[in-house]
Image 1 (tube, rainbow, N blue to C red):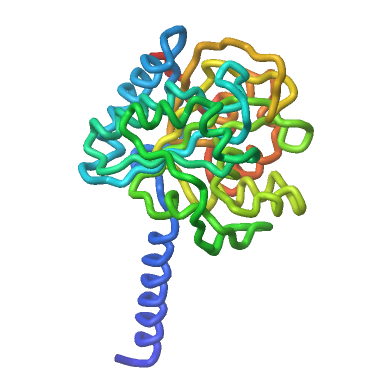
Image 2: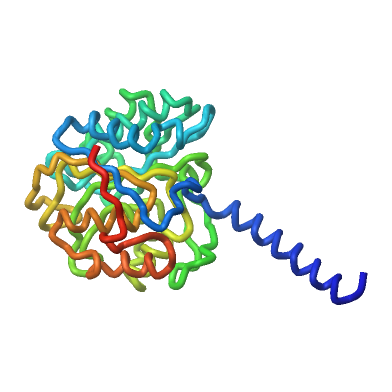
Length: 298
């Protein structure tokens, strides 16, 4: 083997090692979801449980995402000391239905966790999520253990301490609620819900909130995102109390950029005006152009 061939093979081997490490870091969405035109599955005007079941069934069933023995972590929004009717936290029936579906699909455990803005000991109870999760057979976990990771694609956020239950899960499911969010982020749906897995989310606000949201989303892609729009918060978000609209809708997909673009329209916000949506699309994380997104009502 001459020197040129040796160098060529050495470079290829090094690239293979880097690719292997990359695959350990990034959780990727199912291969068949990596399409140019993402699909959003929408169910309306049924009970929260029936709507969750409908959208997951339309996507191929929970067994498409969960294999027998999988460890599942579900991340709802439990940030605030608010009741379900105030639409600042994820509907507990949406969460409990997903827990049960995961267990029925063969998950060995289903952990539900979040790092709230108000004390978790209070928000877990007031939101109704603790009781709902335990009733469904899941495990509600305090946000106590974090692990520092590097964010290879991060522009501003280069590293972060992330909840271990999220990092160690075989399957990560994101379950946000649709809300407005002040002047900086404008909305909080699936992408901004990732702030609840990061220990120092204050860093987001001290630097560049929208870029940091996109940066953390570049690190960890949920296998599935189910968006609670049974009630949406139209004013005084993200905490409320504010004006609540009963929209009686649940929608789901694997492209969180597309989901946020669709969800923003429910709030009367143009996704082109939401900076973290536009940044995420430019980073190759998803599609924000609604004309290129298939909306399927089920």
